[in-house]
Length: 74
Image 1 (cartoon, rainbow, N blue to C red):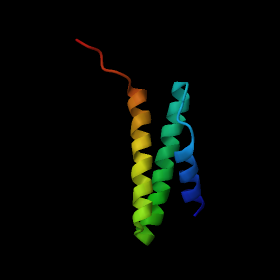
Image 2 (cartoon, rainbow, N blue to C red):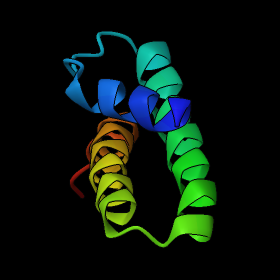
Image 3 (cartoon, helix red, strand yellow):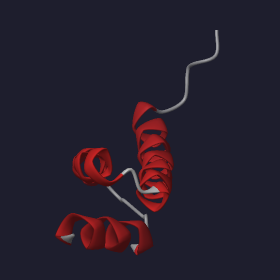
Image 4 (tube, rainbow, N blue to C red):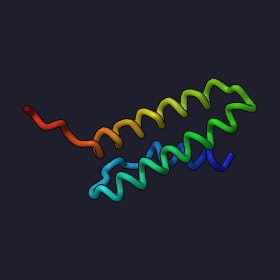
């Protein structure tokens, strides 16, 4: 259950990553947490765990969108 507490703490943290390396580390951390919670979900099938994974995925997608940057206009 330690991974669940860690995931909840990550979700509550302020998401201001100043550098690209901070964003990369945060994206990898989010992925690690999602996969960890998924392993527990496979055993329990708890809906609350699925909701937690969905919220973490949204955070991860926002970080990755910021990493990729804007497309250049033609």
